[in-house]
Image 1 (spheres, rainbow, N blue to C red):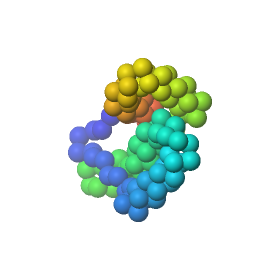
Image 2: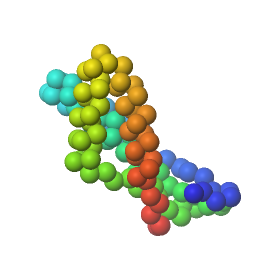
Image 3: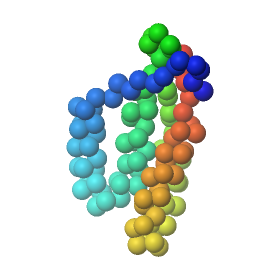
Image 4: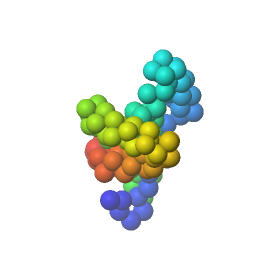
Length: 112
């Protein structure tokens, strides 16, 4: 929890975002779209891991870290893949919110 006067700063660059987008575009094409079910985890995890907690003076005191195992990601993704097929794609939009919740609940602060 952030204390009084603390804030967050994300150092995730546009170049990193474009690189990630390019990699995931290639993976999506190679896997015929199946990579889109693990994409939200890695797409959202990268900026979280580049986020720092700043004190009232703007000095970084900790960083956010979220690590989820591939087995956890795959299990969750398979369930949502089935739900997405059954709902003709509509569940995929809810899946993103589910991933955000899982990542936020797995986020910890690591002192610098």
